[in-house]
Image 1 (cartoon, rainbow over the protein chains, first blue to last red):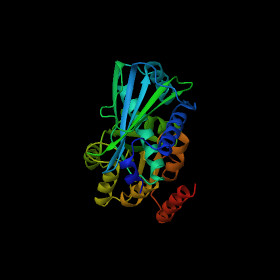
Image 2 (image 1 turned 90 degrees about the vertical axis):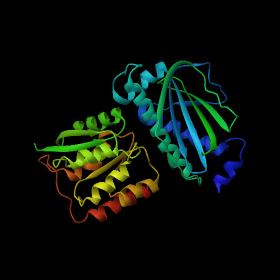
Image 3 (image 1 turned 60 degrees about the vertical axis):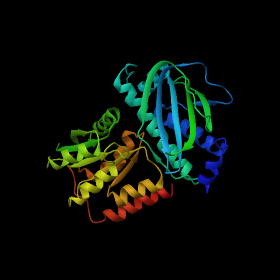
Image 4 (image 1 turned 135 degrees about the vertical axis):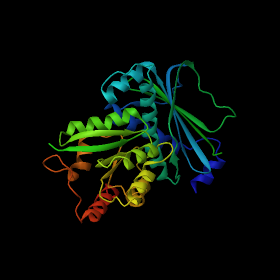
Length: 165
Length: 152
C-alpha cells in the first residue's frame, strides 16, 4: 500500500515527483498552449516577487501540499493566455486566476497519483501575493522543488509530504 | 432564438466568466445567466427561480460541493434539468460519483474549450436555440459517454 510506504519515507519517491512534474507540464500546456520545460537540478533563484498558489491533495493519513510560485511577469502572461487579457497584478481576479490554476493542477495530480495507489481529494485553493517571499519548510518534511521555464516565463513548484492532521 | 436561463456555479469568478464566454462563443442559444459562488448559494437561487433551465457547476467549492448540489436538485424531483459538471477533478472515481451519485448529465474537465463545451451540451439544445427535453435513451447515452472516457 503506497500510503504505508509514504508514511515511512524520508524523501518523496521519485515516481511521485515525476508524476507531479508531468502534471505541472500538462496543466500549464493546456492553459497557455505552451509546454514548459523542467529545469533539472536547478534551484529556484532568490526570494519571489509574485504570487503563490497553494493547494493540497490529501486523504485522512497523508497530505501533499503543492505551492506554485509564480513571478509577476509570468502571472501576467498566464492571465493573458488563459483569459485573453492581462489582469492587473494587484487585482483580486489575479489571485482568483492563480488559485484556479492551482486547482486544475491538483485535479491532474490527484488523478495521476491515484493510479499508483494514493487516493486523495483536493483542498480548496488559496493564493498569496507579495514581494521578497521565501518558502521554507519547518521540521524538514519530505519535500521537492522544481523550476520550470517556457514562453510564459519561469515559475517554481514546491511539494511537501506530511501527515494529515 | 429562444432564451435559455443557465445557473453558473463556481467559487471562482474567473471560471464563471470562462463558462459564460465559452457558451456565448458557441452561438447555439441565447443564454441568460444567473451566477452563484457555492452550492448553497446556487441551491437557494435555483429554489427561488423557476426559469432556470440548465446548471453548470464546479465540484470543489466551499459550503456545498457541486455533487451535493446536483444531488440536492435531483432530490427535489427535478430529473429533467441538464446538470453539467465543470471541474478540475478528473479521476474516473470522481466522474463516476458525479454522474451516478450526483445525478449530473455531463462532465467537463478544466481547462475546457468552447469545442469541448459544445460536445457536452449540444444534444440539449434544439435548432431554435431552445432546450430540448432529454429522451428515454439518456441512461444508455450516459453509460456510453462514461465508457468512452474509460476507454480513452
